[in-house]
Image (cartoon, rainbow, N blue to C red; front, side, top):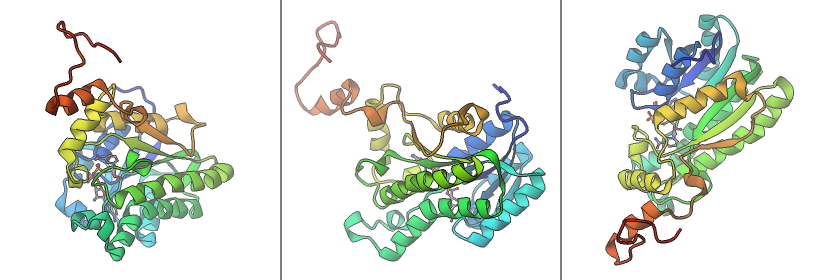
Length: 286
Ligand SMILES: NC(=O)c1ccc[n+]([C@@H]2O[C@H](COP(=O)([O-])OP(=O)(O)OC[C@H]3O[C@@H](n4cnc5c(N)ncnc54)[C@H](O)[C@@H]3O)[C@@H](O)[C@H]2O)c1
């Protein structure tokens, strides 16, 4: 259902690989809400993924670019303004990759060249993107920039490895640049901290199925889907959130405020003899 929340707005969506990608859902929702957009991803991802299907469906152009390369980012902002006919109102950074995770290097045996790549791809690219946009004065007054994060930036999760450090840095960049860009141009910068979601990047995390189930049981509202995340992004791109900036916003069904839930405890206790319900299935306490 469309509420025309982004009517007349121009946006750039980084990171749609295939129809499981969170960026894919955001792109669909943005166009549904009246925006015109360009899509961008690495040349390899454009070849290996299915982004061109999305582009056809949404009548959007794909601009191949490596988000770690400043000259590529300059090209993305130049071309996007030409194609869309003016300054950009919103940008989504939906990019993450850890070569250490891919190569199964554990956190106490990191390859430091690979760590540099993890940080460059997953966090510093966000800084590069914003710096390029600001120097080119490519974002309209009151524009909105978002990146996607994960709660492992605040708390330790088994198997998340050096991506936790990248996410902590990503959230810090949103605050540091949010101050400067807000002060000078009224541009908002935030991160959305999303539930585990079954995507190509997500499924690379060690023990992902267990993590997905655990988060779902721990969250009073259950895991947020990619579609839920897209809805939140649309609100953050819209004029309904004009004064929200420098925030890390949880879209996680409540997980980040939980310590232990009945559903998670019940599953955990399957190996023990405890039971928290009476003979009628009513919860005894809690
Ligand atoms: N899936 C989850 O569980 C989850 C949870 C919280 C946050 N996130 C974050 O959401 C974002 C999107 O990931 P996703 O889950 O949709 O997976 P995805 O694999 O669909 O998207 C990751 C994207 O990053 C792109 N990318 C990698 N290197 C790049 C580079 N150098 N330049 C430009 N693009 C590059 C990939 O091509 C891909 O399109 C990531 O930041 C991820 O960390 C994901």
